[in-house]
Length: 195
Image (cartoon, rainbow, N blue to C red; front, top):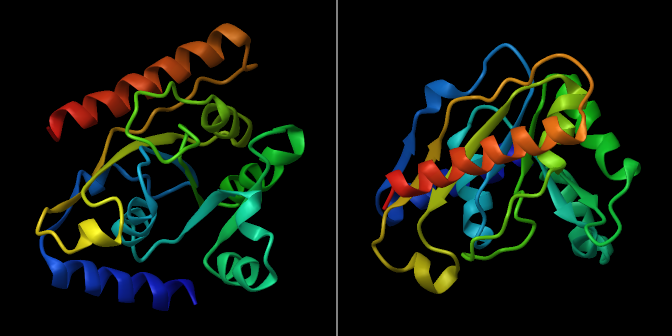
């Protein structure tokens, strides 16, 4: 179901106007990895998924989206898995760590909310990448945030940054802060470049 949905969405996004994917060559080809992308609406989730085709992304999504059995089944078929954002704990990162270790791409929206405000990035993406021993790829989305805005002719842009490779060793509090700050700076630099 994922491939059909992703290719259909890619076709529709291209039909509506310009769809640009920048720096796709930065995506690692020999390992699983975490994509940490800016987030302002559901369109960026769709655009990010189409930007990495033929590869698939496994998206972290808030557990409330899985409350209804029908919605839950569809989301799971689209490679989404639930995360408790209000009470994050070790169990919240077991699934993404396992997926990344198996060579899959894990999609994280570190701000945790769909907002254009300057929200400090959460450290979950760094923790997942560190424990799975995989790189983090910063990414930004620029374009429509909702259905109404999709009818505009504004281009859709997904831009990837250079992968952040974490050094071997224990993830100390200071190291977690340093890598999180690096990730935040990388995403902000990509956003500035797209202004």
